[in-house]
Image (cartoon, one colour):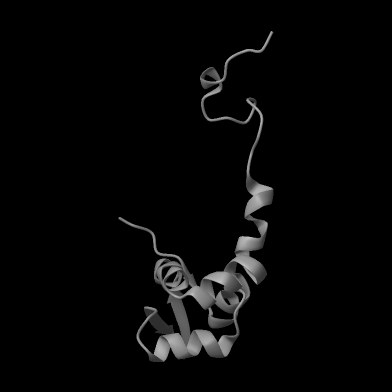
Length: 92
């Protein structure tokens, strides 16, 4: 069974670096799938990712102000952290 990650509108706005109003416009346009839990939107994370990759403006905001600004810090270097250390040759 596939696990579904759901976010509130405010969480999605912070994560993607856009305003809550932008998220709500995308909901009204049918670009993001959601469920309503106790009167609040719970957005499907997978549909948020697809939506953020479709529009250049949203993609740029995501990369500049949202979660994308941290991607370079996540890159691992060095063979100790490589998934396959044998792929690196020893330098002598």
